Image (cartoon, helix red, strand yellow):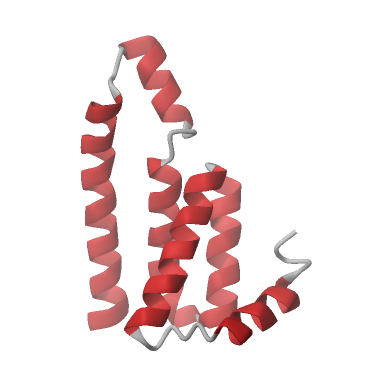
Length: 118
């Protein structure tokens, strides 16, 4: 779907004035991507979002977009690890979010350093 409608999405993004070269633009883009990946809860869909975002905004942001999309996918309650952990091991949501939240923070920090500082 996203690949078929790429031109429409690119035009919409340009009309919204989202510029990845400004902090506000990158924050807005990242937040939208995170929410979309979180909402869909699918590895195939987060990967498609990553490719689409890198195509629209530039390959230099691929690592950052991958990290944001992956963290959205990782932290969604629809992620299969949540259900498996709860059912078979009795893992609480708070334990899950402490572990994966820390991991997501590390991933975002690393991607941010390599994308924006180096």
